[in-house]
Length: 212
Ligand code: DX5
Ligand code: ZN
Image (cartoon, rainbow, N blue to C red):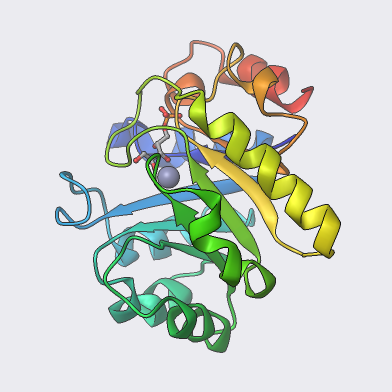
């Protein structure tokens, strides 16, 4: 299983050293962007993403938890994102937002919150490069994994194999050494934040997840 590091709960007081060393061990960096409207929290914006871009060559998987993602695609593309993922529950035209991301030269992802079913995004699956299943309510790091996400990643893998789709299956929220074994056979990558960022030995935890 490949690992995307969420830096949401990273201590930014010594960010350059910490970020560089954590980035070395993982496959992707997951950037959580929050607008205080789609979710009840604020995180950071595209200038921080652009700054962090200078510190690593690892691909950025940018997760827009925004009500109007369509207004910010070019900014996050220019900041150096390789994937931009937005929510089907956002206030936007889903198909044109997917096309907007692709037109910006970036891979397009779609995400579903815990109360949204896979059926609700089925018609978009032929057109996306990533599907991100939320296994917590978006908005905060360090929450408990919701097992209802397991069937969703399983279904997405079945649909992908049956139809020869190209998307990566990703899961986000509460992923750690105990919860990851439930999903590792269905996903291509998993987001992990607090489990890695808050560890005394983060590399050990990255290795635990990577082996699954
Ligand atoms: C939640 C974010 C997640 C979060 C993951 O709104 O989308 O990416 O940072 O953090 P952990 O791994 O701590 O659940
Ligand atoms: Zn996220």
